[in-house]
Length: 165
Image (cartoon, rainbow, N blue to C red; front, side):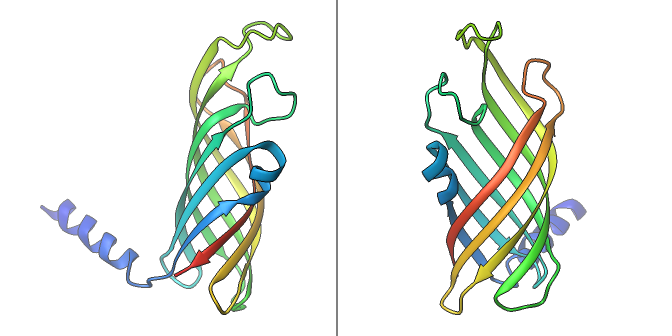
């Protein structure tokens, strides 16, 4: 019963600040044909949590693409400045990713499927207009932890455009 009450209190308090954002990563969409959607909820003026879902639309044999075909990334951000329009932040994330890897290097045979989870960090900056338009730019890296046939490193790059409500 205590755990249920604690979970309810945390849920209600997370929506008390009532700043939320939805975003689309236009950098990935334009450069590597990948779609990433994000939702961010502010806990306080300086902290937020969010979740991103990334889908790679490129074919497996394209020379420049993310290794991951899909990736779900919950994250926590700490904002360092108190400026109303420009903020700098640090981010910790867990990236649950899945994809295919070549069975033999340079064979073009992508038959090793993997699913893994990466733990990582990122830094970035965010612009918030008075009308609610948001633009954030960030970069970071994570390390896959479990599967032996997954890539070692997972990138976390983005140029998001969104709306705060």
